[in-house]
Image (spheres, rainbow, N blue to C red):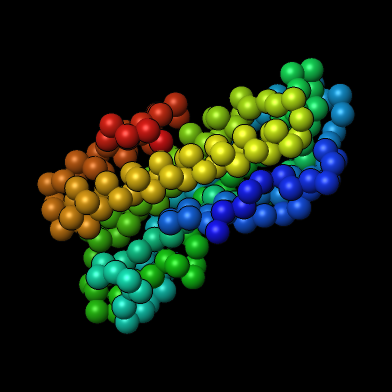
Length: 212
């Protein structure tokens, strides 16, 4: 279920916490309060925690619900709470903060019958890195975002999260489709190269011809 607003405020100075969950992404945002007269500029960092996956992070299961795949990584985009909306000469904006991207333990799993190979782990790392790239693109857009009111900022931020979440979902599906869920080693190697190149460029806005 998608929330109608990231900032569900009775007035511009108060807010409620909401949760956004979709596909391989989860975002939690709490926006509360207003700091008047701020002249700060928003700076948003993105950190993957951990940067590299290990099989110890995966829950062993007999089967993955609704899928024949051997493994699945689910990742979160986690926002610090609370986030205080700031008012500057440019209008309302978000504060500086860090988006943490960790695996989501309950939905990160591997079938007991699957070999815990480095090859399969690299495929799941690709899904994880796609989330990191989407978080970077999200961060860049949120950094530049201003609005005339806290409510408008909340709506625009929520739309931004939705957009980049859906783009990451599309990319993750394309990755699985083109690699035949890692069964095509040539396509798998090509995607790993693409993802590595995108990660090396902090301004990357697309991957494999699709927007982040």
